Image (tube, rainbow, N blue to C red; front, side):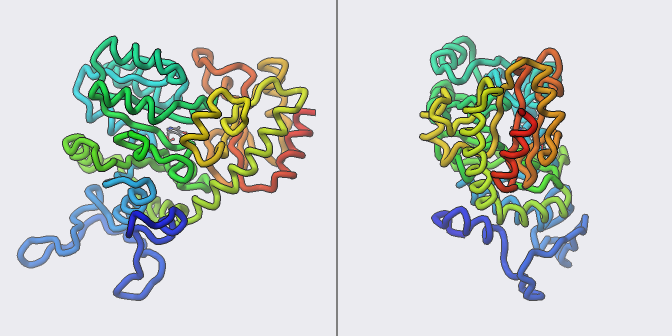
Length: 379
Ligand SMILES: *Cc1c(COP(=O)(O)O)cnc(C)c1O
């Protein structure tokens, strides 16, 4: 598929073809775990065993690589498995520099699990480029991990600037692009070597499939790509064929979903910012957001995620979360249904998240219905 095609077109056609045997317009679901060899022992269709590769996974990886402008993509059983595959590909004792506001599962993997392998994670405020530069000068760094917008405070990292700093010290640059999606941000074009996604979120889009993906840019080191592929195929944290089938199906509507959800989020963020019970709204699409200028450079819109801080602290935020009716109290994001979450409650005492912060994943419902629900919950 030509990489010059538009995202809407790639989302519908990349990785797909009409089945030559039956004429089926949609992909077949191939559940086989093993594939026949030819009399000479060769594998005429390229598949050997389903941990190594499957037709549905292969199609999904092709589509995701095309969407992100990458050379190669690898699908995993979860976003965390994708993150772990990158960390597993590092040498023992490697140093990784992370933003201080980051998905708590990524923080946990580095601080608690990979620490035992001697991987050292240093957490820095990525909105302060001088601080990033100091951190990179302080000790040799093998990996710079970017996540923008950040979770849950929607801080914006200047992707191009941090990628340049990382590359200048010879580090691998990985961007967790789960929240922005390839529709709003293209990290590989901005200088990242690898884009990572929890495909559980916007790629899946319906809160019914878990998955993760790594997309490698054309200049990602070949040795790294090979080692991560080995972790995928030998480590075996791979998605089932039906998961891949669902993700490819959902990918086709991702461009329209993300745009519609982002439009609603922008309207709700502006309304919340004026609400007397709201102390602060974290949404990069608002001109008052400290990362607004960087967001405008690297995001096609402010996105469909926001968080807001309720006047009155922990109890007041809990009360608002308790009162929503249309919006569902649940973790995760990126689905068609709106979700709200009191992050401090779920992240626990050692989390730096403000006590009164509610994270809001804006779904596909009508903006007026969502606004009415928030109004009665805040009221
Ligand atoms: C959900 C999420 C992850 C982890 O993905 P899983 O699919 O839950 O393993 C990583 N990064 C971000 C930004 C996420 O939102």
